[in-house]
Image 1 (cartoon, rainbow, N blue to C red):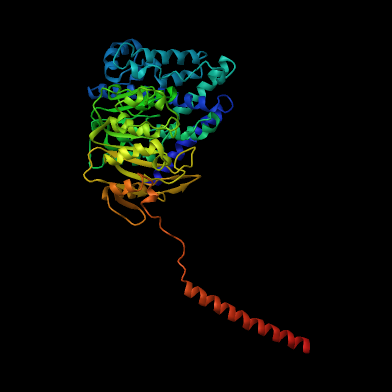
Image 2 (image 1 turned 180 degrees about the vertical axis):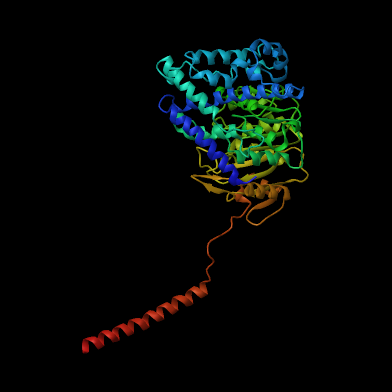
Length: 521
């Protein structure tokens, strides 16, 4: 896979989104615009997904020319129960994206048509196993909003543009793309509008290259896992990297996560469907993971990845129940109320299988600050749970220039030491941000797997030495930075200065003699 092809696919997708933005500019504020594009993109995708599925089955059975989009609704109704059971939802042929789009320009009630279709798709799952996975997925697309236009005609005009813009997106088959087209569309829209929305992009989206590194760190030596989990899953981009790397069939029990923000939670479920993850293979919950964790009763996870929000407030010791919570009680202390970072680490460790690996993006302060955070680090090191700490370059995440770190956790390490990797220079500059290339990812993974000292890049440190450093886990404390300043030989420098001084004396005398000669003439 070439970085070049990746950038070409990205540029093409970004151009299409930018064109839709120009068509709608001024009518919808940025944050809402993003929901409209992603919502219609989702509608297009599930329409194509269900039609492709039905067509493939009929053609396999011998009807080469079968096209679900042209089937009368009355005939399609006969397969409703079977399809909801398999796909989790049902869409009538007349309500497929391609058919609605083809009629959109002449549909004076397009807003009502779309609202009715979205309601039909959601209600098709009512009372079935997929109800929780489908419910509320179209909540963020208000086709009757005044933001789309003051009159129904104006709103419909913009909805037509939206349907056409999304219809023209060259998405292909996600498995054939070198980029994750939906994830990339999400990242680009975030970049365009995060300022307007007053939201930090890093809080919602992890760059795909970082997601890839996290997934690979948890998969060393494995070709399949029981299931993957993200306690702050955002739009699900980290979880979905596993489908790309391993193939979704090699994540036996599927994809699990929890998200506190309702809009992002909806987007995550949409993202699962967009990646052809069936409803019975994902379990994404809504709520505060630290105080109302879901998945208590599930077996522990073999792979955990996360980029939790940095230094957010949480209940901490204000809630007397939390110190007895089995996730936090082993450390004997709770993460500070103003900085929940290590609470996410303790939560992830608690949900981790004995044979599993967790890779979590961290704010650097948690690695060296004192107080309760130092006590939690002491617990982690004394129990040999920290496998590796990786220093990442700054400016990798949209909306923050912080140089973050990755903490890798394991419960069954073979030796009592911790690996530190300084990857702060492993990046290339793309526009204003830094990006990890495939070569950068490979270099980090090679050092992680080699697990030995490498000058200015990696250090394997006995846990006793970390204890002697007051449980400081900053990479810079153990991996010496390479001094790239020019080495200066003082003796040579002094000799050069003497030569320059002597030469300047000679020149001074020569100039004085010339002046004297001129004046005497």
